[in-house]
Image (tube, rainbow, N blue to C red; front, side, top):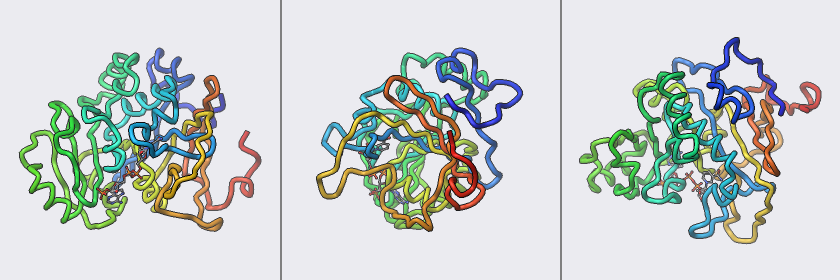
Length: 291
Ligand SMILES: NC(=O)c1ccc[n+]([C@@H]2O[C@H](COP(=O)([O-])OP(=O)(O)OC[C@H]3O[C@@H](n4cnc5c(N)ncnc54)[C@H](OP(=O)(O)O)[C@@H]3O)[C@@H](O)[C@H]2O)c1
């Protein structure tokens, strides 16, 4: 295990979670304007994050529901003030799905709950944030009507009109906010979440389209990436996506990431990257090798 960050004087994670994670976990504070944004994906060795096969398109099919990947997903959800996803990712989940820690890894449900309430002093589960330009959404899903789960739909004027016509106003725990579209600017979403929903740590669960725009706009601070040791291949148009879709970089504009930590369990790798490099230059041109 490699961890390149200096630890705080006192451990953040309680002992049992620290031991299960293989180290401590902490995040820098948010700025007054924006939350601190962490992404989480699981990918095959050849960079595929979705098989794009009906019923087998989720991250679980990529990781083979790897317990350590699920544990990290739960830990990140337990740490976050809000969990965000695009409508494409939401639609791929079961109608009853909730983006809470215990759903990712039920075995640690109680540990997550104690860490969240006693260590982090967060009173409620993370705010669920769904981003959709069109507003086309199945409002019977559990995320929109589960008592105790607060959900925010970030959409456009057209999306807001469609949601209003679909009865969104009658949902007790879900609210709709309109921002300029059709492609909503990540910075506008971050400003809204920080200023009006008190979000300091935002967990971005994708998918590739939403995450691609955030990364391209410099609105991602960290990426937690699990590499599952399988190879999916690509032979269909459109090709199976990697964790970035809808944007393409050149060698001159491509973001370079700093490797923060590497963990391994069996054949899986669990990588933590930071985007906060001191310059846009490749790491190889800035300092010595990572490992
Ligand atoms: N392996 C993993 O870790 C992982 C993680 C996440 C997702 N996935 C997989 O990725 C696939 C989904 O990919 P995806 O790229 O379609 O996911 P996505 O980014 O979650 O959803 C795309 C949709 O989100 C909305 N959207 C995204 N960015 C927007 C913006 N800036 N402004 C307004 N609306 C925006 C649009 O919705 P409207 O069309 O409603 O306007 C868009 O069609 C699924 O198979 C999912 O399981 C895998």
